[in-house]
Structures are given as C-alpha cells and as structure tokens.
Image 1: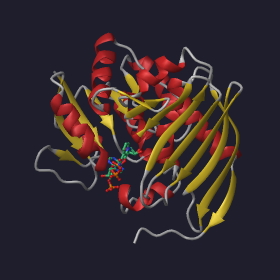
Image 2 (image 1 turned 90 degrees about the vertical axis):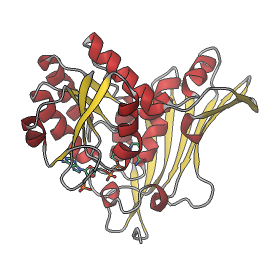
Image 3 (image 1 turned 180 degrees about the horizontal axis):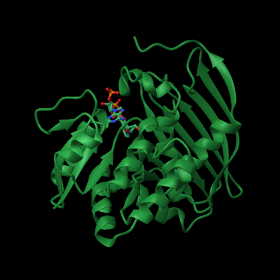
Length: 305
Ligand code: NAP
C-alpha cells in the first residue's frame, strides 16, 4: 500500500479525495497538511516539513487553491514524493512544465488530475466522435458560485481562475474528445469591480475548422448547466451533468456510474507502479490564452453574502 497525504484539506479533499483514497486498496491515507483545518479522522500537520518529520508518505495529492499548488509540488518532489495535482495544475503552463522536469530528474510520478475527463460519458463520446465529422461545438457551463463555492473568496482573487475554475473542466473534456487541438480566437470576460478574476465569459474557440463557442457564468441561479453539445451529420451528441450523462441524437446512452475520483486514483496508482508521469497541459493552455487575449469588461461588484 502506498502511504499518501493530502495537502489542502478543504471541500474537494473531504468530498472526493478522502473517500476515493480510502476505497482504493492500493493507498493508505497517512495524513494531511493544512494551515487551519482540523479532522478527527486523519492527522493534520501545519506544513510539509511537519508531515515529513512525522514519517514521510510516498505520495501527496495537492488539493490547495491553485495559487499554492506549484510551490507545494516543488517541495514534495524535492522530498522524493509522487505528486497528484488537483486541477488546475498550476497558474501557468511554464510552472507545470518546470514541475515535469523536476519530477523526471527526481524519478517520481507527476499526475495532472483532470477529474472531468474521468466522467462516465467521456470515453463513449470520444469513441463515437472519432468516426464522425464534427460541425460545431457549444459549451454551456453555468453554475451558482454561492451554492458551489460558498465563501471561497480566493476564487475571484489573483490565481483563483474565477469562472474558469469550473470552466476549465469543460475545456478538459473538449481537449480529450475533440480530434483537433483547440485554439482561442477571442474572449470577452466580465470582471466584478474590485476583483481580479472573471465571473462570466464567452469564448470563441476553434478545433481545426470547427467553431467552438463557450458560455461561462458563475452567477446562474435555477437549473444549473454543465453541458457540451456537438453537432454532427448523424445528430447532436450531448454530454450533460459535467460529462456524467450522454445522449446521441436524442437517445440516452448507458454509460455506467460516474466515479471520477476513484478512476483518478486508479490511474495514479498505475502511473506510480510503472514509474511514469502524465502531464496534460492542454486545458490550462486554453485558459491562459483566453485570460491573455480576452477583452475585460467591469461589471457590478460581487459579494458572497
Ligand atoms: P477550499 O475548500 O478552499 O480548500 C482548500 C484548502 O487548502 C483550505 O483548507 C485551505 O486552507 C488549504 N490551503 C490553502 N493554502 C494551503 C497551503 N499552502 N498548504 C496547505 N493547505 C492550504 O477549496 P476546494 O473547493 O477544495 O478547491 C481546491 C482545489 O480543488 C481548487 O483548485 C479547485 O479547482 C479544485 N476542485 C474543487 C472542486 C469543488 O467542487 N470544490 C471540484 C473539483 C476540483 P485555508 O482555507 O485556511 O486557506
């Protein structure tokens, strides 16, 4: 069993990582690092040196907000630990390629874990699309920040990714299922007064000759939408619920249970066993480009309460 620690014992760590690690016989949850969190369940240390002093694990899953991820990963790799990076894997593409080199030199595994790529409908969607002509793609990714990220001020601050925090999940699915690489043509981003990250945005992308429109909204109340629609001459393929549900030409396709995090840990265990890394930067590249070329428009101030 591989002793593993979680760095950043927040919402996603408690909701998904802890249960997925506990359910996978190849891992043993050895502890957590978090400056303030408490747990009855797992020993929590204030920083990585304190965790290492208590007995080094073999691996860490870094589940902090993205701005803290790369520094923690550098420390972990320097300590000889295998590293799973929650998404987004870092703030910049260069940050993560730097980690990839460090991991290679240290002989440890680095895994950029894009959980939405493991959603139940994604493999079947990719297989079906690989035999078809794609005419147009639409992403409609609209959720209520107050429901899904209550009080997470960091998300709208520098390095928080704003509406790209959920939006990058859609992009990670697209980069996985579309045959041609994605490129950004234009982006319009709405940034609340006093914040640095967008709360909504529309992107025009291309995958080869295929137009890809992306609507992102973090202020959406009512029915939430994490949908991708893809037009083909054989009908529309629709991935809904973040990739968990698949319909093709109006017919529901059976895709099995949605077990994104168990699949991520299975993949991490295989990578470690083989001595390999898996570093996928394509979704981060698109977001970096959109933030770079996007036209920013200031909108009404946002407060969680
Ligand atoms: P969160 O609830 O704010 O949890 C982050 C935790 O990391 C907090 O306990 C935070 O402590 C701690 N932390 C901050 N800096 C740290 C450091 N240097 N060392 C150790 N711990 C540190 O955020 P979250 O929702 O879990 O999201 C974390 C990451 O997971 C994000 O990149 C997000 O995109 C990804 N994710 C989230 C979800 C979701 O549904 N929430 C789903 C999939 C992926 P303090 O609060 O004291 O700063």
